[in-house]
Image (cartoon, rainbow, N blue to C red; front, side, top):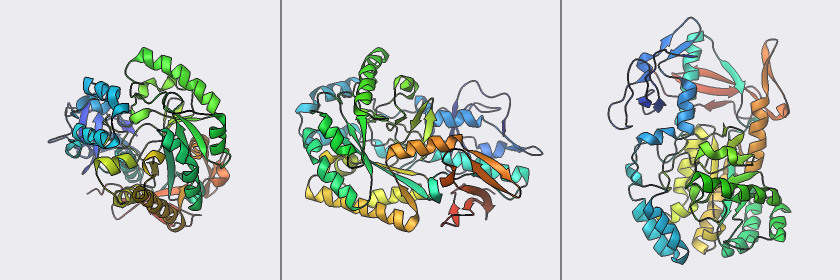
Length: 442
């Protein structure tokens, strides 16, 4: 796979087939400054060599631009996570009832449905670009299939991660009941704990979570919305956050309100982070990583948030069903991706919300039992993705085998083209054929 020479000096938006946007430098012309309007279509500028494909953009650069949200420089979302309004809001937030907070937040995020990019309710642009490129390689190399290491262990069709952010004393007290509820459906989870100011955090409380097989992670420092405001202040706070990570025996981190600056992640002394939404329409910091797969940011693994938070569902959208969650899980399953959830113990204590959460748990159990999804805590996903990244695909006579730590749970998969679409299959899997949802090409 090669990129054309003479790439533009500045990055911008372009199309890569119907409904798929890329962001980066482009060969032969300046890409668009905005995702709106008419955009150049990279499919028209793809060229083939004897055994490869020449793209009019740098594939690695475009993927990184999307994952790291660099495209947001060219997007006007209408709200800023670090503006004066946000500062004033978080200064008085502890004094406001939930109903008042919800009303102010709906006003603040009222333009969410007008956002053109990323896609809603799930964005998998990165995954679609990669798979579409794989489809081009099949044609260029004139081969029937391309082998690769399947995404998830034991041939699972997709992955599910349930996470619980504990925000208040009442939420902390509800954690034991929430664990019992999760256990009744066989759904493991992680609990993200705020170390300072919100509530008391005792060793007994942390041990009560770990003893039952659940994971403990660190959530921000004090949940005041200011972690990423300034670089020096971030470094000061992270030094304390890292110490809390050691005390909690936590390998994962999440920032409050999903604020993030991925270029600062090198300061975090954790194995993985869970602060980047795939599509952040309903978050104060807009953007999103445009993928439903984990990815590395330096040494840190990012496990993206790929579904709508319970708070947003109940308070922004005023929706009290799992219909949106089911729509999102269906879309992610088509991509064989990660369905990751944030459900707060603080917001599901009432009967109505609790029943909705139980319906979600039942749906996830159905996805596991009927669709082959792998339900796992995020720490397990982190360990698997790191193992997979170090495995090697080795030719074994007429076929292929996988070598490396954890390879006994790995599967050889094949990408093939069928009826103009990319299709995945595995030789030794209960799921014989899995759609790759690639863009159909003429």
